[in-house]
Length: 198
Image 1 (cartoon, one colour):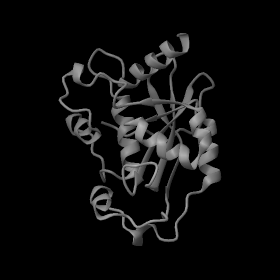
Image 2: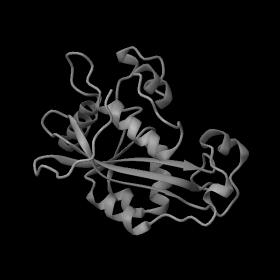
Image 3: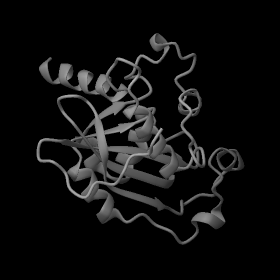
């Protein structure tokens, strides 16, 4: 499966949304912190639900106020030596959030809680979840976990549980069109349209 290409220009008729992934010191947005944030803006055809390509992107590391626990490092591979002295470019992140019509994440409730804590403007956006917003089990997949879905679709991640790789792999997954059907992303768009009409 081809990776999505960077677009030189965006058709005025296309929509633009953002896919977000964070790596953290733990699971609690109250006590834990972001150590890596990836945000990729992508264009999509409103009529077909096709993901057209990447518009812009940002990936940044962040030194937290507490040490990264060993169990968190075992998941994403990041240590304090990796993130020491790094901070997110808040201006760039805010501009990308502002350009997105809505934001998407795999397990959006998790990512949203951490992102909104750092960037309150993200809380004003509609968030869609690629884990719960697509009927994966109805399509025959035994797991909704990202790495399992990527493996089932033969999408190579590069480095699992790192922001940039997870975001771009997730977009490839959502862009996938099962034979004779629309893309997975179109299901998320349907949910968005239904919510807007309700």
